[in-house]
Length: 89
Image (tube, rainbow, N blue to C red; front, top):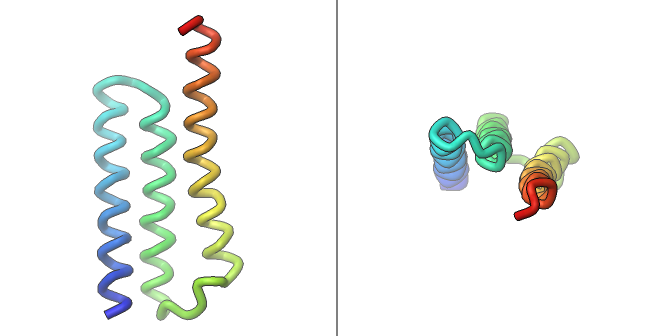
């Protein structure tokens, strides 16, 4: 059951990444590109975690991938705010 749920989370993250890529293509807003990269990383992370047997979620490699995931989201938000500040919005 855990493998099935990990697969569902991985698939959901991949779909979210594709949707953010679609939004980026239509609007060229870099925030969507940051979010697409973050969610694709999360999809790969969960898929690898499920593929190798869902051992310990506290393994350093999985935690590092999650740290990068959240770092990408924060970087995207900061980038969006810096661009808005430079343009005077």
